[in-house]
Image 1 (tube, rainbow, N blue to C red):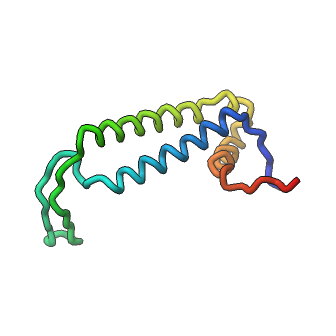
Image 2 (image 1 turned 90 degrees about the vertical axis):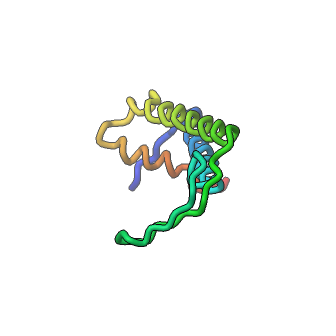
Image 3 (image 1 turned 180 degrees about the vertical axis):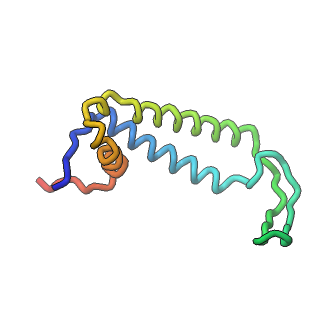
Length: 113
């Protein structure tokens, strides 16, 4: 039977916010042009696979600031979650499983009452 972990509420909240920030950052990066700086497009079909990019207008200062803000928050949350005092209470041999459970805790359906 799988071990059940009683994660502290602040750790669960930190992990949930980390998921949200990563999803927001990923969505933003998909919408932005491929190059931060304005760049000409190119087509290279001489390599082992064809590489092709359209011209990029680059990112605006606001877009760069938004990416930086999200990356900074992602880093803060990752440090918070990975160094939380809870991990010292989990046996070293069980930490990997516990960490995996925490990462997927948002996917688990609540128990019916």
